[in-house]
Image 1 (cartoon, rainbow, N blue to C red):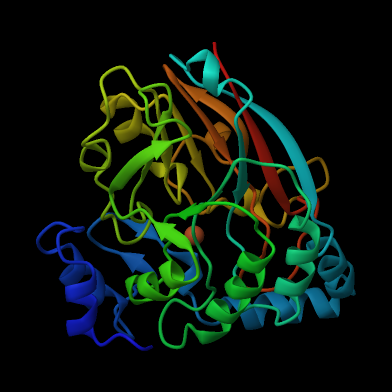
Image 2 (image 1 turned 180 degrees about the vertical axis):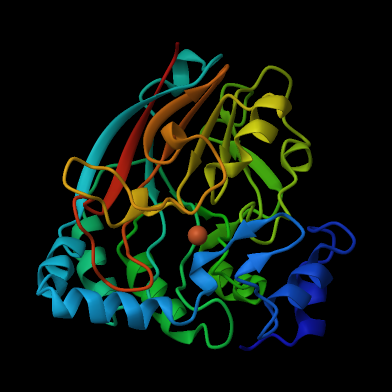
Length: 316
Ligand SMILES: [Fe+2]
């Protein structure tokens, strides 16, 4: 990476709270990522190193591997109306292109195909809800090369949050590509005359747990509705308590491997099952969890096609 940690501290100066950067760097270190996190009792399957080998062996033996690879490349563009309480008339019909979990270093050819399918879509702003990378530490260059290809196909503003597979060291490089990373930060989307939407974004709530939604809402003009980007739906309670109106997230891949009938074997998220794919509501909070564009562990999917989502903002 171009940025030393001192350079990164300088780059992010004033944008992250005291201790945020140091804590993240410490946990990003090789060997710092546990499979079982004793502080929370959470199992992080993505850190289970032999899971890839076991899964690939099982799929090859059963002859399902190639079909899963073909499934993983059949990206769907899904249309969704996102209800946002308090939305002004001027923002009705505003469109967000939602891309999540591309894991661009799993398959070196994936970025080209994804870019081809994104080119020409009509939207006002693009939001990426994390997991650019599959590796959880070390070399981020393959993922950064992939996102450079994808970014070139996106003709408009792009905002993002980091996932549990992403390093905070990637932020300067992402921002140099024109992807504004929201690290517990927010900004006005659409119109700056008070008629816009506050787009808040938080650091990863699944593994790094550095999400501070209250901080991301700081500076929001009175009565302006807030749309939150968070990598995982696991931030749902914090989002509802903070007064967020709508939340966009990913991380779960919708299970990625589902049984016939659509039942996911695992969703890797500590939240109610109905929050782990598609549109959902929890109390007053509306949300959408993308099943993701990419795949992790292996480049296969079953009964759970990859997607990007075109959200059209509506009142309600
Ligand atoms: Fe994730």
